[in-house]
Image (tube, rainbow, N blue to C red; front, side):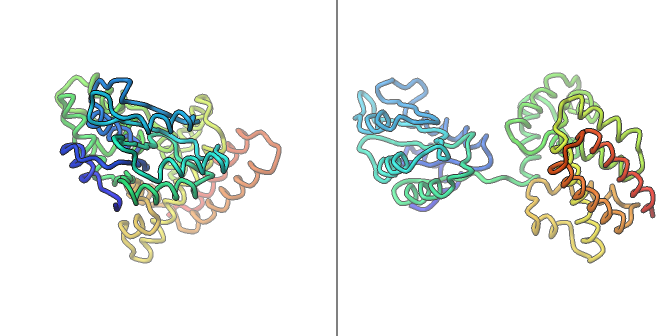
Length: 347
């Protein structure tokens, strides 16, 4: 059976026309978790009996898993076995072979659901890919990939409405810019802001007062201050990041990302290449909103200054990784050098 879409999975759940084996995974972990729960409830009911509902996670006991798969339903239509976040990276060949054997066939009266809501293999990707191919042959594979920024904004509006609040397109985009594109974090953030916002609509002021700002957003703000010569504000933001115990290397990477975005947009504008093309070519997906901000931020900075800034960022990265030095001092020195380059490159 080929891979199925979200709509296909919804239909199977609604009609209770289940495959013998499911694999649910992907970057949008909120959807993975949500649909795994819906599928489990459809197969086993909201209050399943221990006789017909068996769960495993992480470092799995395969003997127990094999025994659970062979249990016939007792006073129920189906036996449901749920396996979440299998630790592929920790598995030796014998255990991988056992997993292969257990997931290569359908089990009478049993629906096997394999879900990866929080864990994605980083070392043993080959074994996970092999699992996908096996399940495709006998069951259903549903992958929830990252959704784009326009769809995320619709979810933000939906969650605000569920809390009795309205929210504009611009303010939805602002929350996404502050928090990032993780749907779990976004939903919690919208719920929090909606709970404390006093009016019928979530306003710009509500977001400024109540919204959590992630490292990327804070660093982009700092980069904007540096590029536009606001040294005092840039150093205050940097001091805040250190007080919040952000690692210097993470600050550097986020700052470098902001400059790379700015340089890409500058070169694209000089070559008459659209923002949409840049977003597609560099796989920005639901981060495409940062390109507008990058373009505006460097409107008065020369291309040569941006190139020099990138050179300094690379140099600092090499020093952080190879030289025994006070890392905070190195980042502060970097900000000073970037401010000087921005001043000299003002247009």
